[in-house]
Amino acid sequence: MPSPVPHAGRQEFDVEVIDTWNMTITPAGRHSGEFTIDMPSRPYMAVRLVKVK
Image (cartoon, rainbow, N blue to C red; front, side, top):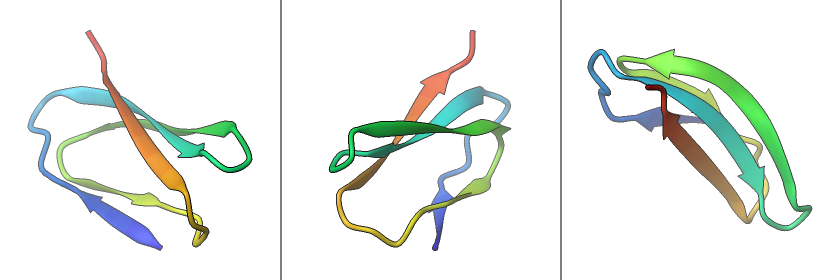
């Protein structure tokens, strides 16, 4: 299920999807501007955005 992310402007972010139950981290690419992230339809999921310098 896609989850919208607020407009990030010109900043770039490395995005990761974190499964806190299975303790896995899956890279979801580098994004900027307004974008969506395809999230697995399972409970206990999180998203980490790290600003690219």
